[in-house]
Amino acid sequence: MALPSRFFLNSNAVAPAEHRHFRPGGITLIADSMSFIASTIISASTVSLQPMTPGWQIDLGSAVDTTLGTLGLSNAELNSIAAAAITIGSTNTASINVSAGITLRWAPRQTLLLGRSR
Image (cartoon, rainbow, N blue to C red):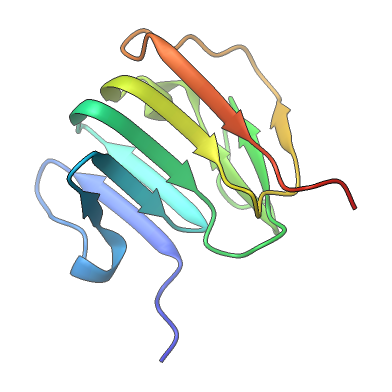
């Protein structure tokens, strides 16, 4: 059974259980599309954001979330995360593009992860 590849979080709903990945050390969200509407994700540890499909790109600062093969994360979405650290990407991420300025106010440490060179 294939899992849906979209993650939505707003103040009126909780995402389906298959989209929430909670671990004792932090929160890991894995989806090909993420939208955090009027919500805050809080962790005393690390929040990790990863595309579900191997080889996908990540676009930081993106104003759209419809580019095929790309997980777009806007500045507003990234600033809805309050954590000791934020990790964006995984070893399966093809590339990370910064298409617009971003300011991570609530995460003092940031890590960007990419796949191995091909």
